[in-house]
Length: 132
Image (cartoon, rainbow, N blue to C red; front, side, top):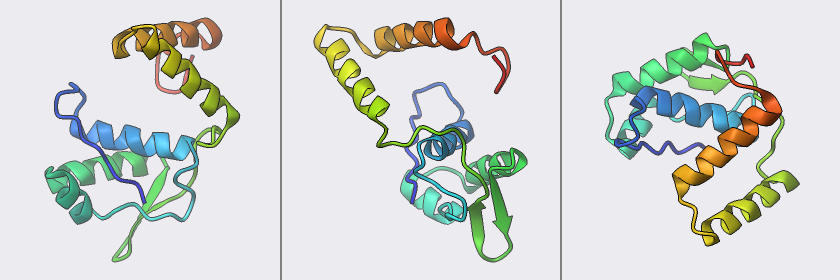
């Protein structure tokens, strides 16, 4: 089951953090169709956020067709995203690269800037969600 981590200093709204973490789990194969998301109550107990924030995130995921609410049962994954399983050899290479970047003295923002630059060079600039 997914465990949401809320960073109150990220500048990203809490509901979007839940949406993004769910999308990432779907991309990495950590969530699959039929899997149940934690209830709003479970998320509230784990993260101390407002239940309406969880429900807003789940509505956004439902609107995107990624999950579905089943009355009295909970919220379930409808489909996955991407094809980059967490155990992919590329993940190992990326972990190694990140370790070397850190050893070279780069901080998180430096690494993010380099990675974003490489993404733009190979995939183009994202202008709207899902379009490059």
